[in-house]
Image (cartoon, rainbow, N blue to C red; front, side, top):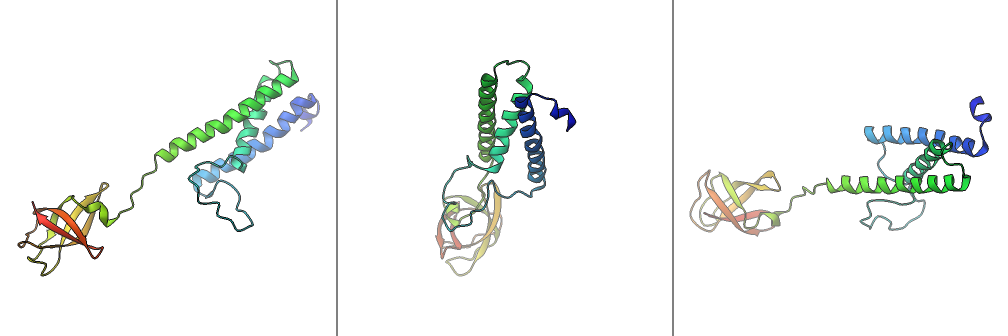
Length: 188
């Protein structure tokens, strides 16, 4: 740290911000890639319903503070010799720090667009076609099984019919759902 002792106070301040914030950023990045960080923020020590929002981004979090400090400090270091006015340098560094936080917000927003909801509900099978896997007895006298694709995933579900027996490999249409778990189908 002898190198930092001979620097101008403003440049020294930028370095004293840049070094720890860079180390913390490096640790956060490693923890993110190995899956250790589960949340973006600190757990509160009080009872409150803070999780009911759809906000993908917390403005005041440790991660955003580190992003701001990275942009602020490294901009100050980079432009110290180019911008002679200390006030202008601090304003530019502040704006770049805010830009870092905004860019992080945009990246998180784009990553969340990649999320896909593959949860399955029986209601999604209505009016869809399926293939009979196990023959379905006639007149609701027993159950068979059908293979149906919902959101790109195949599901093997119990099925009954009010019509004649339906053999394996026949194509059927789901007309309604009985008891929240049995599909009522008709042959196409």
